[in-house]
Length: 428
Image 1: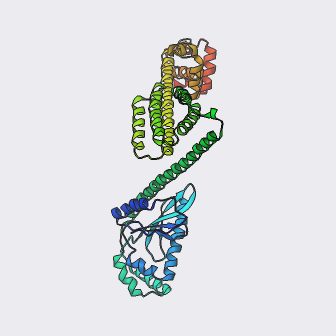
Image 2: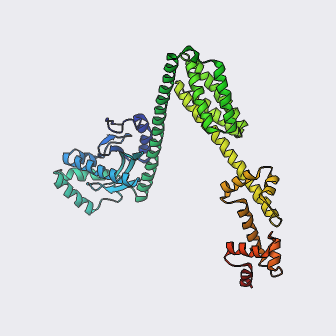
């Protein structure tokens, strides 16, 4: 059973979704939960578990009910403060934990769970009940009779349940916030489209949209996709979508058909631009499945923007992989040729790219210049050779690519901290 009152949490949770997910948690664990606002007031009780006879006895007393609410309020505040489950003993001696409900740093409340004992009732607990009964003017025998119905679980079970509930609540918030953001985006997009239509209707006839202008924008858009030019692709897409929507006013199916066609063309252009073909097909298939449940043109436009963004990201990811591959090949070339007089032009020619491009890749991927990396390789190789007594310092310098022994000594000291000779002497 679910009791729902209007509160500040309206709009953040779909009541049926809350009931379904948290109800399943209750059914799986046998633990009763309540959703409370930041004042400690219960606004929802997911699942089919009523309060225990013990808690009902306390809650039926006005002062006891107030103490319960105050306990929940303090627990909610602590849970929100630490952004994690907060364990506490309520004023009646039961173990409870509160899981925070936070949305973008806004305190919404908490999920209260537990109302259990972690041990069998002992004489200290019974004495506490006597004191509670006196303070609330409740018949002590009524409380004593309700004690055997209290659930007793281990501390490990309580902690595991709290951790699981924390994950569940986070999942609910994430899903609902995403839905809210999407709905907000739909409304903004709808307003933008309607404003454009009104603007064109009020303008001169020469602003009427032709299919020729739509196809021209489409070709430009696909070109930017192939080039991986994200900013221009989205700028052109915005204009293209407005034209498609405006041209098909009164015929929503026509707008849908054109956007679906555009999605397919975008997929092919993304592959031509370097996106992985298999992944592009997967993205497009996912779009088509979502399309089956979409009724509003605004929804379709929202998702076409999303898949365009995903296609472009895949192009960049693949480009990054290509860059990493080029840097890997350049490093391999240096390792095999460090003993020779080597320049960035030599490596670039080997890789069939420009020296400036290779220089940028080294700075982006390795945070150093080509010469820095070459020097580091030569010094590391020199360290290995200096361990062999049959090689003189001069022999080592020449073997790793230094043409001048004094220069070798200066560079070696910069990287190792001592001259090659001092380093050699320290080994033997």
